[in-house]
Length: 384
Image (cartoon, rainbow, N blue to C red; front, side, top):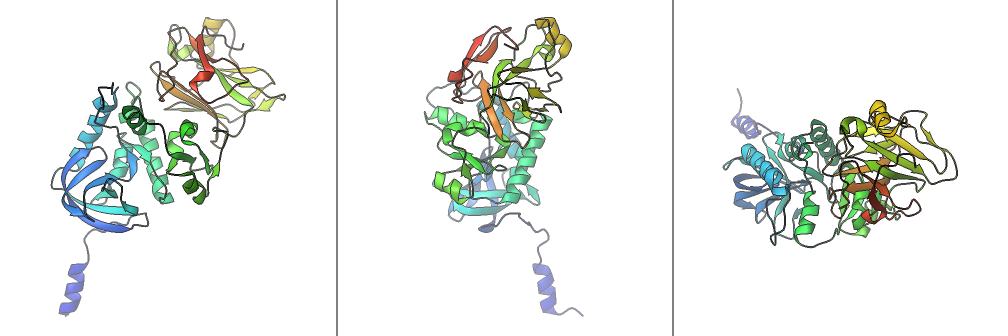
């Protein structure tokens, strides 16, 4: 016969236990009062003195505008869509489990937490459904970063939410906040895999999915990251020289970009990666560039030949360069970035714009400031 103490012990075993993959400072329960925006909820009763909870590890499009500035598509549809999705997951009265990290409350008095509804990691769901961007500020737990990164890549590959190719988010949330308040980037940015960091102004040199943020340079060094003090990549021998993103006729067969070899030797770039905001294209085995020469990488051989009268060096490029803005990077096979550009304000400050039939090109291959100042607009001249 079961003793009364054994019965009490059984009744005290929770029916569902959250096993967070973080070294939690604390685990608490709370009740949702209402959803404030895509990454913030209000609680009916305070936890650790805070009734506002800011979700850890993610950043969602904003729902405010300041000073009458143009919000672009930050609020509508993306900020509103993120908020509406979170409301559907966490309606008022929902019981949640709040798992805090090393810092429990931020300078605004908000509880910083991973939010669970039963066994559902709500932060992760926002990423997987394309309503958030991964946003990890050190210190954090490696397993959580990698899990959230994979969730965001799922959203990217499925082209949902902020990654919708027909209407992608024009500015990352922190870029939007900086523009609204006339601020400049202020966090050092590391590459989780290369363990290198760049200065705040060079954050675009680190792929979105690999970014980790540090409040200070000392934080980056304490985390074991070393400075990529050149601001971008691991080689100064290769540059993206020209991008033809709004082709005459059919973009799907006319687009190309061009890589230039600044070195005095032939370079084998087999397996090097070209990336835009949605896709990655690996250069095929046997791809080389002679010293001082150009490599033309095109979408389609026939389409390119019809426009320019000769065949490209490489065809089959899978990138779909956005006519209303995109970002492009060249990376070595290990994923370290070598060169970067953006256009039509896809990244704040990169306001260069080409009309249909025009290309953007690097003004001088001896200058690489990693900024829009290196670029100009003109007629496409592949291979020259």
